[in-house]
Each structure stands twice: as C-alpha cells, then as structure tokens.
Amino acid sequence: MRNASEPRIVDLPAAVDRQRRSRLVETLLSRQSVGALEEPAPQGADLDLILEAGLRAPDHGRLRPWRFVLIRGAARAAFGDCLAAAVTVRDPAAPPALRDRYRAWVLRTPLLIAVGAQVRPDHPVPEFEQVLSAGAAVMNMLNAIHMLGYGGMWVTGANAYDARVNAALGFRAPSRLVGFLAIGTSKAATTAAERPDRAAHIAEWTGQAFGGLQG
Ligand SMILES: Cc1cc2nc3c(=O)[nH]c(=O)nc-3n(C[C@H](O)[C@H](O)[C@H](O)COP(=O)(O)O)c2cc1C
Image (cartoon, rainbow, N blue to C red; front, side, top):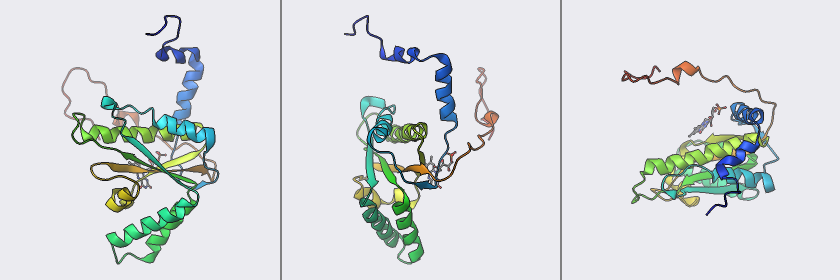
C-alpha cells in the first residue's frame, strides 16, 4: 500500500506551476506534421522518451496492444525493397518510378517507426478499441517528437494496408499496422498551420437531442 507521505502519481504534476503547465499545453498546440525531414533522428535518451510516451497510451483491458518496429540505418534499404516488391504484387504494371519513390522515401527518412496493434479478436474489448489504442500511441509519440524539437509525420498509404508489408513487420491479421511514423529533424523552420474553426468541431450538449453536429 502507498505510504501516506509519498506523493500519489496524480499529484506529481502539481509540483509544476500553473503557468508552466499552460506552456506545456501550448507547446502541444504548436505541433504540426513535418514531411521534409533530415538527420539527425532522435536516438538514445530522446528516442527512449518518445517510445516511453507511446507506451503511455490509454489501453482498455490492459491488453497493451502497441507494437513499435524501428526501421533505421542499413535496414532501410531492405525495407525500401520490401515496399517496392509489395507494389509489384499489388500492381505488376506499376511504373518503376513508383517503386523508386517508395525506396527513396525510406532511404531519406532518418527513422521510421512502424506502429501496429497486436489484436486479440477473442477478447471482450472490441478490436476497434485495440486499434484505437495503437493510434493513441502514435499520437503520444508525435507529441513527444515535437516537444523534443524533432519533426514527425504519421503516414499510411497502400503499404500500411498491404498484408505482405504487414507480415514483413510481424503483423498478421487481425493484428495490423496503424501506420508509419516518419521521424527526423525538420529541414526548414516551421510555422504552426492554421487550426480548424472550433465551432465546426465542438458543441455543448444542453439536454436536447441533436439533429447532428454541423459539418
Ligand atoms: C491515420 C493517418 C494516416 C495518414 N496517412 C497519411 C499519408 O499516407 N500521407 C500523407 O501525406 N498524410 C497522411 N496523414 C496526414 C498527416 O499525418 C498529417 O496529419 C496531415 O498532413 C496534417 O498535418 P498536421 O498534423 O500538421 O495538421 C495521415 C494522418 C492520419 C491520422
């Protein structure tokens, strides 16, 4: 049992003053996706923090469905070949330029994290929630990437839905990739993109049944 003199985990952030907490949230508000990446990729303690953030995703039933597969260094060439081969199987008539494009993307991305959900179809927690939890892990990592001063982007595309690519990374249905996190350092200074109009996304429910949110 917890010793009464020990702080509860939920109390720990109280040591951080209010202004600093607001600034932390503001840092999150300045997050944006960065597609144009260069070296360096996070490594060592920074990479550990990013991965730990992913492992702090909420998770119904303590299933911990998150699986992160790091693709970096020399392994990128082989993964580029894997994507190129998958293109050929999907569409034997695909132009060579498409295969080259995937290879080049992998090779110029300092670090890829393939994120997937290890799905338990027999479990009372719906598969949808297990996959959502893996998505939450992606978001936690994107936020950590941003807060540490790196850039990242969540990418899917046909490869993320390709059974062969999934299998090469250790995911067999119903387990599945939820996407790739492309990570590195932003090539250019970034300015926060305009965010959506709040009214289109947020409503207050006053007790009357809605006909539907506008949108
Ligand atoms: C599940 C998911 C998959 C995505 N897949 C792609 C993708 O394959 N290619 C792409 O250009 N953007 C993709 N995006 C969008 C980018 O990750 C990013 O959210 C978008 O460019 C908006 O940028 P922002 O995060 O700065 O608002 C995806 C987003 C999500 C949530």
